[in-house]
Amino acid sequence: MKVIEITQKEYPKSLLKIYDPPKKLYVMGDESILNNFGIAIVGSRNATDYGRKITKSISYGLAKKGINIISGMAKGIDSEAHIGALLAKGKTVAVLGSGFDYIYPKENINLFWKIIENGGAVITEYEKNVRPIPTNFPKRNRIISGLSSGVVVTEATEKSGSLITADCALEEGKEIFAVPGSVFSRNSKGTNELIKQGAKLTENIFDILEEF
Image 1 (spheres, helix red, strand yellow):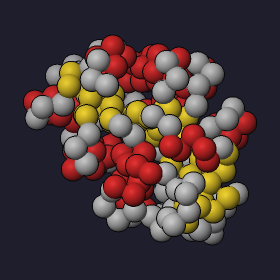
Image 2: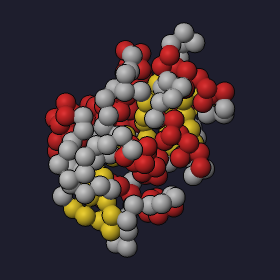
Image 3: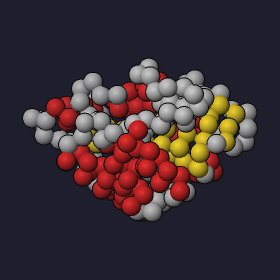
Image 4: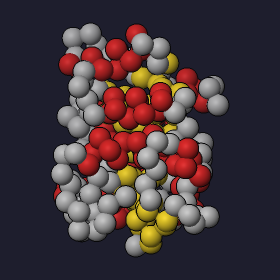
């Protein structure tokens, strides 16, 4: 584990521009990729097959283009985002809502190590003994957004935490992308609402790439 303080040159430049940047980052993996161009992909923990499939497809395609995939290593959409990048042999960054003594969720411990072993990075602002309490996760979302040049929401309920990440990105003047879904699906209520509010309707990686 490495510790990068806000005063060090290794500290991600993009995080210096966000509200309340973390004073320290705890990093496992390759810290140099934190300054690379990246896109965040986030969404529901209780993902549908549709959400998983489109997430993995977008993540894989972007990673093949050499773009960092940034997410939160939660169950569901976040996990699929990291897996898609790994399948493409690309780089992915996971931002935790806990310290390294408490990898959360526990079933993602193998994913945690795969990210590191494949040249990615896992980071947190929390000291290693900090447990994954609920209030940590909305706070960590500003880091996911801050590291990225745009945020893709592939599946989200009306009250999904991923919408907090989108709000952070909006406040930072970044692009918001949302994958449309069925009007009958609870998991598409959040993404469809984002599109109504001006997020770019996104069906594939080309809808994202043309904005950069």
